[in-house]
Image 1: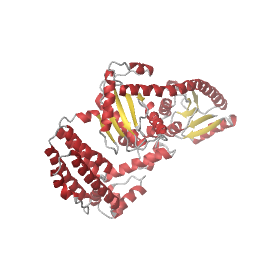
Image 2: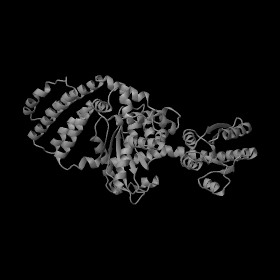
Image 3: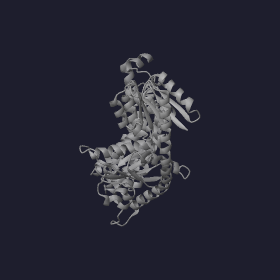
Image 4: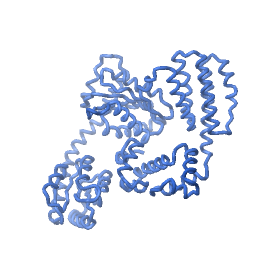
Length: 521
């Protein structure tokens, strides 16, 4: 069977072409149609299209622009260009983009039939080559992960500083100038879903990055990434930070929001691979159990214990305010152990813990005025009466977990009726381009009062909330429907598709098209 797509902004041209093709190739073809370049691109991304008849002169995305995108996405597609322009320059440009043939409108029946027949022969020829290539690829797909795992294992556990690991890179034809390691930990993984998660991660990164991937050890996975400097003016460190952030965002969106990830420093010395690999593992060990990205450089760039303590304290406050019990439990241990490991005097540790407890009480009372914990009254006595770090740590941990639980429960119970109406309006008018004033009028209050109330109750501005709500909705539509990017943008209140794509990438670190193509929830 051959999948054939006809794309023209005039329905009568599509109908004529499909009539000729269906009549002469009945039982051999599946037909698809599109009235615009963007619709054709969406269909080509979603379906395995063999042959495309593409008009050049269309509103919006032109035929030549669409051909360029499709050939980048699916280079084996056979494209036949249709146009009323009988000009050499169009034909030449289309051929330069990879088109198979150029025919002018109105189309001749015999020309269409012969063109389809020749295109089918070309598809068959390419399928034959693909079949041989697929057989070889199957063998490589079996062997390559084993070799990759062996490379990662050697980096992690080699005790020979002089061991030459470059032969692995030669095997994969990788020229490495700059590289880094990541170590990720996936929650709730077992023998039943381990391979599925491994395959999903491999599929996500294999075509996007030059990387090598180990196998799961318990619930942890180590990966090696190459980073090339494509532009001399490019800030390499900035690219590295952006790349690690993008990797983590993709894992959070597609695997689990509680994925933990550590990343080594960026290096150009291949002799240091074993050290860099261990850096990534150590960075992972410093992350919250509730999901976090931590770079090795961020672990050590704060030189003094005071700065480290301040950083952990701020992380505790942030996790407490959102009611994250697991996060504060982990950070309580880190707060005490960091100071103890640095040799801080016991009395100074007691003082910092007591100060922390006072602020914890204030934050908890602010968010849950009815909450009362007798432990706060005995805090000073407990701290003065102990000489053990472990006792202080246990006391701090218990208080933090109780406070975080109290904050989480009150957040769930508290629901201002006016805010509820505002959220209902947002959800019911997702496709409309409304203003703050429109929503305020619908609930009968001033825009100033509504903006202030919404920020107090929801912890973020009205605009930010609406943007996040719309973008979360677009994710669902991208994964669960066949709507084009333009249609999804329209249904979620974006009249400009390009603006929507920029907003989506800014939030999730990946374009809407790439997100849909991953096919992973």
